[in-house]
Image (tube, rainbow over the protein chains, first blue to last red):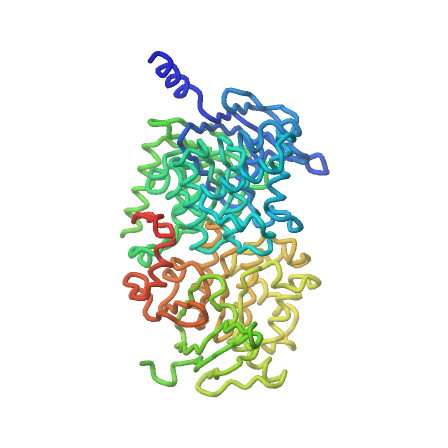
Length: 352
Length: 270
């Protein structure tokens, strides 16, 4: 009895993946520093999924690479901590990370998963390589059995194993990549735009597969990166909005979509298109301008140049992430009450 | 039924067959569609349903196997290069991939200058041409002074797609064929591009054919929606009717596959 209680306490205390104030940079060939991930903190607990949203170039994919500890030039680790299962991996050699962390602790589905398979190898041979890279003493037969049973439980046909990647359709290729990435039973899965190259039906299949992975306990938690907000809303429990390397909003999926606080998050929610009855009456709002060049980032708020509600002090004072009730956080100079007031005033004017 | 004068493009029994014998593949199968002047029409379907093949036939890039295309009441005749060019003055396109829509050896001002020349502005004074190009660029929120000495590949995907709209602004075609113009662009810039397209359409009063796999997008922009499955239209009609009260099972499936925010997204139906 006692042990169970203790385990429960430990489970509650240690999140599966915790990142504290992680900062990473790209160094260009002119020795300029570009801080693509800027003091990002996040926590993923067991059974939870976290979504990361933001426009292209805001550092979503860099964040994914950074929190796996996968640093290869021009990407460099600067400061902060990455703790997986109570083990600090920040500052570890990328080769060691690849051998002991990737695949077994964290798995990654890259953005171009369609090209992630080796075109000259059958899927089964590819899986052999993957498994034997982590455990060279596994025999071929063991690997084959593992692959077959894993594919069966994930609902993929076993014939796929004997095929070359070119023989598979896009959606099937993507699901194969997911199946291969979870074959070593990782705890955390990072999916970086796994469905953005697929049509809606294949997308649904991929999402269903990812959800099944979570529900059946193949993976403990998931980080899902995409710019499609309706998708994120349906897949994840929490949503983090990134802008220019920083987190600007952190909330549950429902709050982030229906009640965003940060002006950028608000603008992003205004660009949602879903085939529902109210759509044709709403006007899409686009955010004018482009993200700042992070080579010489603005001294104040990074979003100040594009913000509708910009004030003179925004451009000089840099703001930290403000934590409010219920684990919500946002990065703005205005308080929650002031922001809500601004939004309701605007809504009132629009209605008139 | 729209009267004959307002229909600017009409197809009857348009068919395209690739290959022959056992390799035969009917990409577009006896398609009849009508395009009213000034309207926005969407063609929605999954990948492989023949949307792009239909678009290419409408553009005159490939010849139909069977069937006719009527342009402004007359049968379209593009048998010679000269007639083809004449036809392309009336119909223009924006393609899915902005990265391979440009001639990469031409600088941006050459791209835009070509458009002015195509509209018969070859003899205009240089200052006037520059003014026109600057106007087109400012319409799509680009700065012409920054672009003049650049090549298209130096721009981002969203900027390239906007430059494509600037081209259309200069060309002022009667019909614009937009083949998945926003599928390679993230959700935020998508709203910008759609807004610009619709604004441009109101300004020069052109007809837009919108080809997309995103049924939400089709619903947002268009008056009339055609749903395409395996080269055939399975459903067509006013956007509100088709999207909110779909009849064909295929349409229902397409709509149910798109993630929603106000309704429940049912994952069990795959």
